[in-house]
Length: 110
Length: 114
Image 1: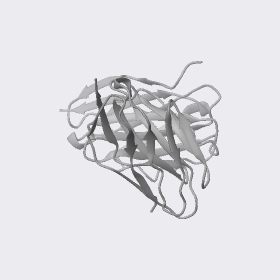
Image 2: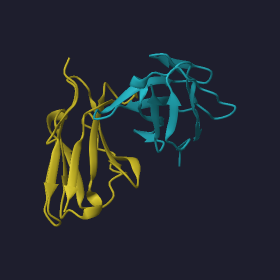
Image 3: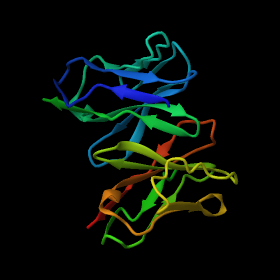
Image 4: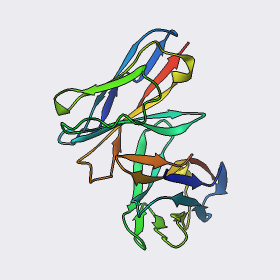
């Protein structure tokens, strides 16, 4: 079935560093792709999404581009802040549900 | 407006007992989902409701798990004869309809089976 693989963490960065969290997927067809974020002590929140190839999703300085040729949806941010410390989940839609990656812990130090 | 709410926020139960977890979706959302988040398995889909259609139960791990959705709104997830491996955070999400994959998640219920 459809699946998502994302880079293992934790990823530890200094404030203002560049961030890339890799995400690749296996799917039949062209599913919508998502990044969800879970801040400490909070529930899952949608960060951004892309519904077709070459779409770029963006929010809060984060971006991800739907790359059909490489089946990827890498999350990027040019300058991270301490407040970005969270767990990030890549996901795709499959039938009636979301299929999630394992999650990547991001820690940003001041 | 109000988001997805779940109750209780925490539940500790003894092995073998039954538990009920409740989810109130966002008003007007016709699609409702249950997921489970555990250390060993990550985020797993459990069940999906869409309007009055038969639910998609393909993610339920065993017949001890069941869920219902009354009046197209509130949903209850029931786990019978709980086992220690059922310990996890149970997440509910809703979306406007099945074609809107922007799911809004509740805060979850942390279930601990002792």
